Length: 542
Image 1 (tube, rainbow, N blue to C red):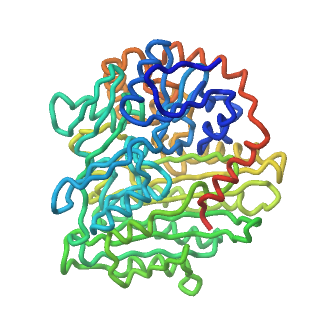
Image 2: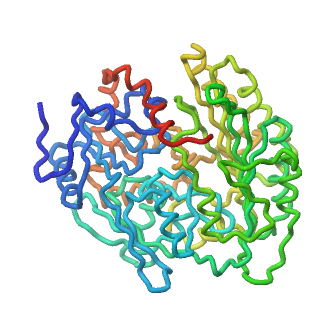
Image 3: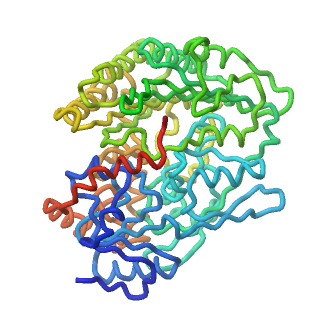
């Protein structure tokens, strides 16, 4: 029976419609198919504010919830829903882009803009901002989870530059919420760091932007190296050494990515190093060329290659906006398979990591998965240094305007296992056992190799129940979470924006009921088995 959404003029796709499977698909779908949590009763493609308000009114009338999706890249499926709840798709609803001043120092844009487009428009004016690396990620979810990226030490998070946001709240009011305005203090705090889409429908964002001319001598390094366990360890040792002194200048950022071999494409296992010197003090700032030389030596100067056609050796000035474009990658997913991906941050300093021989342990864990071509699994990893007294990741959080957690961390680690059950019937089991062992040995106890505290982040979440896992995602426990819960109650008392368990609690009946009924899962067609491959083909790492 067709549902009636009064006043809604955009496209509507109901469960059971021919286009339902295509409309439901998002990044984590295949990884969570057995959970039955990416199965909304309907997907509503909003055209404008009026459609968003119509969807909110429908949800309130029928005592259900709305899951908001802009790009659909949320790792644990939290941008979708199930049961009688509905999906509000904003992937092309809010696409405006306006410079606010003649000097291009501030911009207002819609949350449907993807990062590739955003960066390109900034770069056309010699402007840039720190942001993530995946081109197809959209601004809405990205900024609400922080906007983590490879400029984290030198410039902090994308959200640090937000001056105001436009939001439609559960009472159907459209309002601008401004940083520093007393009456907006709580809602601004909750929107940026609470949990994306839990406090209303974000539509537009105004940000201060950064200028190339303020960094006239900036330098970048980008190179691909053949993977080996020993090479990855040497490169990680360079990263850990950055933390030997708390006074490492804030100009230096360094990130490593590792990808298993892809026999189907003839691609060997590789390591990609990204680094830059931001020239934060302008002309004539002293610079230590040894930073890039150490990375090159660790990877093997005679083995360094271009990555996706780009090689930067750290010797020639590259404008920051150009570096930002080089850090935005044409990626939809790294492998065309389901995945287990766990992200953790650590406050451990270099002395602690060296004492526990972390680099040897973690490279050994990666090698264990990557070395067996018959296990049907593919390893992926990313590591980044974000610490030190001069890190903007730390310093930009000092005003307490936002609720992002763990900003005193020194290091980030992402360990992922994609699995192909057509190659090995045990692939999923192997992948899950691998990440479980990583966690049990790596985080959350005094002997943990990486972090004695289990620190997780919303953009890299892997849990399905946020209230149950709250201590891992929010620092200042329980004060911060309790404050967010109070703000949630104030602005969304009917839980219109609580579509699943990965939301600020307490959880309402429509979520708990949907969880019970999700066991009668939707019967997806065999064609959906190739959905990851189609997404991968549309844009992937090579």
